[in-house]
Image: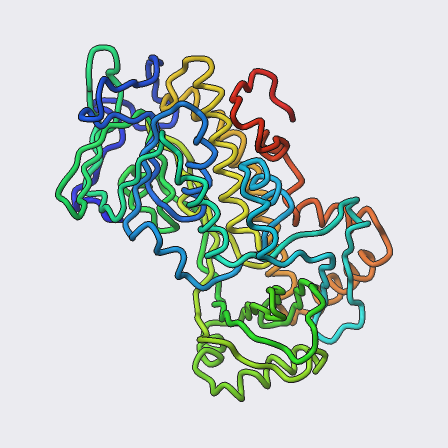
Length: 455
């Protein structure tokens, strides 16, 4: 998704540029006809996070535009798997798609933590948290297929796909709805102009919308890259999610259906590049060494891929008429598998804020409304970003004091249940404020009376 080369302004001309810029609340936009192309919410980005947000607004009565640069079904051909937290599962349950997803993914009852050749292996179990399981592993097409199916009969959601977002400008539609944002799209049938009360950037870590709005970021590139691949071991993976720390970086194993595993091998850039291009036999020998032969002979399925890792947090998540979600707002080290889950939690939280504003006849694009979302999510995301950063730095080192510290920590975690409980509440998404959607049955979505929110 590409904006024009001139910086597109998200703010009306002459408005303050800070997050405290005042804006008058007015009633929600209601177009007299489709020719006006006037929407309450426009979501830029049709990935998993953008789709989740659109699904959460399906029964809202709001008019939603979903803008995606690729064909709508492109996500069905993306080969990647994710660790899915318990909270994400509850959010999908609230959306009404979990019963479709669950039979196609792996549920894991055990998380195994290990440090190189240290014998203090920690097995985290459901009884440590008081739940029936600890998480799931889902492949990208499974999630996308369920989300797309949910939107098939969503009369309030209009797709623009493939569509290139060319320009973002302030707009005044009428005296009754003076505060809007005008979007210029390039579609296969020609250029289109839409007007929206709220534009949501779900357009990825390099978010053109974030950059065009002048929202800065904090963070850094790590000294590491990740090599991912899918393997099939000779022995059963036992539905165990493994996080094995080595001095070069974490080595994660996510169990998939059909006794397959997705591995994520983190290493300094040069070493990661080596494992990307090494012969298949050499690569599998390295994996077998890390497993200490416990999984038997390994078979490589498909190609290996490589991606660099970084930590990033946006200076702010909102601006008048604009909100950032998912990777557009933040990204973290993949250790612990938190990245996508944070974005899904963003989507559920923002949807809840928008629905409350709709009930109160508040302007969903006003700073007063959007600040509720930012206060909710920014600090909670900082906690997870910090947690993953500390994990990577603590375990990816040979410095003797830190080696001793982390091994003592593993020994303590084995013997002290509160430490296991604390770690699991962070890893499963059950810490912090939970979205109401995570505690709602699918049937209750059809009633969007949120006047008595459940916390």
